[in-house]
Image 1 (cartoon, rainbow, N blue to C red):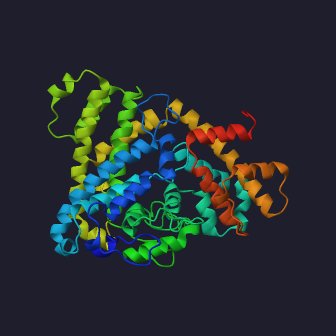
Image 2: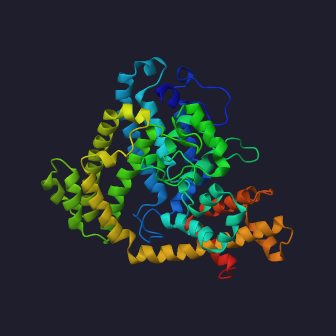
Image 3: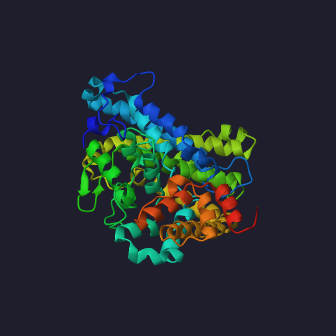
Length: 444
């Protein structure tokens, strides 16, 4: 893979390329990507989607929106620092007009979207949709779908749903958000389809990145960017190099900030903060640490230094392995290769034990399973009954609640079902709860 092609400013849906040298420096195309994401309805909905604690009643716990903004900030720094060195290594990029800020802008925009496709109720939302089709009422569709179509549903993936949101055309709107190909490439952490599942231990094969409904869009993106194929037969490719930085930004933030949230909520003892986060820090100023009077201030101090330390590590590892990354042979995440891997794993394990398995989280995730299954059941039944011309009055009333863009007039079962699934996935936590109460007659 080569950087000039990977940094394509061409917008999804365009027919002509956009040379970097011709860009308006006051509002670069990659900056426009960031702006379009910020103003999108899909991004706004993240303000009411769970990051760690579902429907928390406190005012400081992260949502998907605040998490995404923080990941974007870290991603911008990673991109700029890597870009500064890459321009020295590849002077042809500077001659074409590229600057280190371009790398930062691409990674920042892609980082901003990294959770945009996640369903309500955290990662359990993905599992709830998948289990509805695997062992719930949706299992009856298995024999009517191709193997890959069915796998899309039983392994419903927020990354694939995000790609759908970013690229899906609607009536009068071609190309979704019409982001640059470079940003779309950096977004694709798992550039493969749902089958075969985990064919190798390469990090790019861990999950999948697009639904069958977006296969053509995916192939268009990887062709434009010159992404290296892993398997043409299975539409599998090696990552865009900047996807490693997007992943690192996310890994850094959820590792450290979820841990910080757990401490501020009282789910994790504060003594763990100093014990574990200080292992990521060189030369902590203990006098300054103990001079801070409040738990939130002390953990924030440790968090800031720990994040900076992990940024240093990620940049060093990326630059040391640039050649392997461009060849597609770098098969781990950046943090899996860093010298703090053991310490990071310790922090994550504490977060799993103390936060993710806490009673508050588990109880709300259980409720989320029921809510999502019921919503899928009602809407899918209504849209299929309408297609089969056997819709009841109740079905027709239900369809009045389903936005028109999700009511495809198609004889393709997969397209009808995936549209309803993505509609439910785009709901915020609170909206899903309100909709469920309405459909079950608990509120009028």
